[in-house]
Length: 616
Image (cartoon, rainbow, N blue to C red; front, side):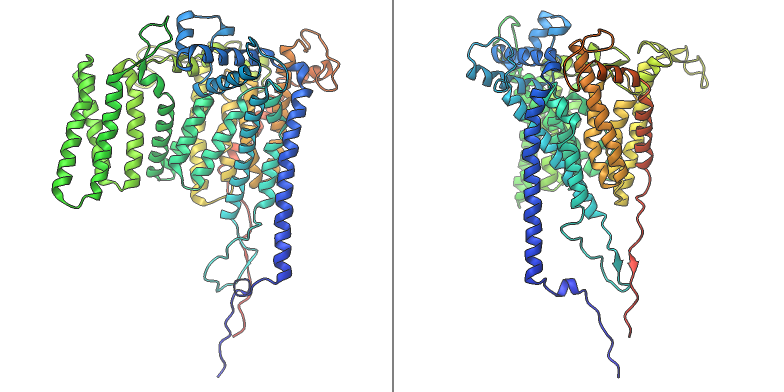
């Protein structure tokens, strides 16, 4: 009788030979040496860029950075925003920095005062600016590492073997080198990006700070650490407020993917991080603006502490086996909720506010009672963050940090496009005659739908473009969710689309903001080498726009006619950039459309070939 022939995967049963193992070890050593060499060469390139761009450095911003850092050092970090509200300085000296951005410049001013005691103003030496350059370099390296890990993770996740036996019980696991090449390309596109380098080490600006926090938040979501992702983006928003324009992506993405729990985890992490950083203003008051001394806002402190205590008491009841201690803990929690509401009622707030607070506290307590311990931690974090932010409404906590750090930036510049940018508004202004964001773009007639609206409504151009951006952002988040559920590598394209929309559609966008799309666009190389080339175009255009703005600030432009004896940054380069503007915006619109379209499509890759079945 003929015995059936069984086949096994030789790779899983046979150990590699000694020579093959040595070859693999040698390849890994070579790869690690290559990565370390690139890191050091990139760091040296940044030092060179600092010296090379000296003639066109944007002195206005770097002087402001040091000025505000010194103000925080002298007046106290928490007092800077309130001082500006009271003094009402002119635009050039009025702060529009988010809190952690101000904190970085305070640390910089502290370090320079130690090395250069009594220095009243910024100095151009490398040693004076070393802290800022090292800080920017660290964040750029974090961006490159995150891009590498995102691409490597998704290529391994979506890997398919070239051939598969028809009777194979399960798909083979990808080898360690799967995705390494394209992940390394993504690393190179970020680490050696001229756009990133000139922005962080030529200007130097803080726009490169957006990319690492966004990419690490995406990576943590891919690893299923949604709460940590919320923490990271909450911290990132306190560095650069532009993160808030795409933050909805991390809520809509899991919602469209039917993963409500992940959305709630992310929200709790974001609210907790954002509120903890703002807690200095939430829990203190400044009775006299003329004095730098601050007082503890005790009702707010007791309210926040009581809220956290109530939930913690309810949370630890799961470790108690007897019913009586559990009931006692619930009773203590009820008393704590009542005590929480008392400062609000005593502060003169309406009964409706107290009832709303009681309902929210009860809901949080019920959730903490029934969830597992990890779920309780999310509820506690979200409650602490929410109670901290509600101190603004209930206990008169200061809001100058929000009004100046986040809102004033949207009011300071009211141009269609700020600087030599190339986007939709640049075309509307340069080719179609729209001159103001307040121009009426559309009028909704009275009784347009039935009897609504009662009167005609004029819609300004800024609001119309913002509405279009919001609609397209929701669609882009839907694309992210679709690719996520498909486990399709075009997910790497979809995560770039929100930043492309942000730069292309709304008004009042700086030319430097294309850096956000160019930086995150390196991830798209994992899905398409062609999109890697498209990202190179975005990188070069961003670098050119940034350099153009720097030259304008130093008088090197077609309009003023000044020139520099510089091999690149001179009058001829300024003339070239003036000639392609704003028509190069058509290419940016096309790139945005390509990203938007491909974010919905499937990655086209043939299915693994089926080997013929073994003979019986």
